[in-house]
Length: 485
Image (cartoon, rainbow, N blue to C red; front, top):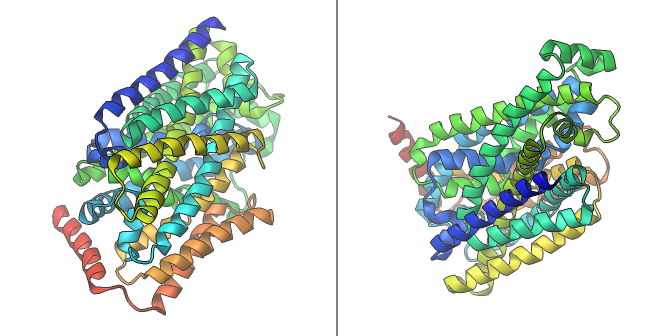
């Protein structure tokens, strides 16, 4: 195991080094919060996809495929094609609106669109939703990290969780979004390599795709049937196609784009990557099921395959890739929570926008430690398994999707509508989980529809936004149409 440990430690050291190098480029709070708007299209696209998939890709997704077989393919369609939708719908408008409003955070963007700088209701509500949801989301990633290191190295789960937390906090708090984007890019490339390598190992040890299908059928013919309850299919598709547009950690990547005119190129890179990673892992995990049909913990089937059929060095590389999936989401989540606290609470509300860059950076770094500690506590005392802890948070954050999308496309949507949508969508998702219906219909669908209905209904019965806000939305649309000609 010494070789495996050395490779894993080398990977972690590399991430820390990137954080250190990024910290040297962080001179202002804008550098820390949105990377100084220096992100190229390829960097944004790969980092976006790495942050979106998380440790779920190599842990909980394995168990989902093992338990439902072809019924899980709807999740592959959902998360695989979601980047196309997210880039085409939001990338260009978010980037341009960031320039127009000089926003430094996701919540700055919402506050500017919903003309709430005086009252700050949008800021306070959004910050609460983000802090709660993302702390839970972060805990699910730490659970995945703990499960991985425990399965591969036999380390104590507690030690494994703490180690992963320390590394993520260190490089995220040092380099801000710049460190997040570059580490996520590298981790995304490592994830792509791992899926390619894993497919080769899986099919070479099962006899190919046809043999995998026969093996799955022999285990249980029902696993070959993709048709599950229609309402469940709708919920699974909504998790990606609608949910991606509400995730602040993904939307904030667009805020750092240097050239929003290349959003179509970004969509192709991120979308192609997403389709490959989701469908590649889907078929790979079917092969893992055939190789280990009696596995006591299907979530670790992929890890078990790598440990059984590959040299120790490659076990280390693949383990690093699983940790990359964990950390690429963890750092993005941690950064958005940092931003919500240091920019949206401390600077904008407590200091009335007068905080110095040094104060903002310091508060952000302290926040990273506190949020990390809370997430560790939840990881030690989870209320569900990795999959559903992850999806609880994803559902809550999906509340933002209609508020962001309609805000950038429809000039009639109002502040009061946004407030109603945010509160109703988040509470609707939480209640849906509490009553136990979440395995029947995905939380994202509930959050999105509830927020959308309230947003539209309340907007139509409240006074229209100020003329300057409506002009901004028109200017945004006209600018994009002109650029397309």
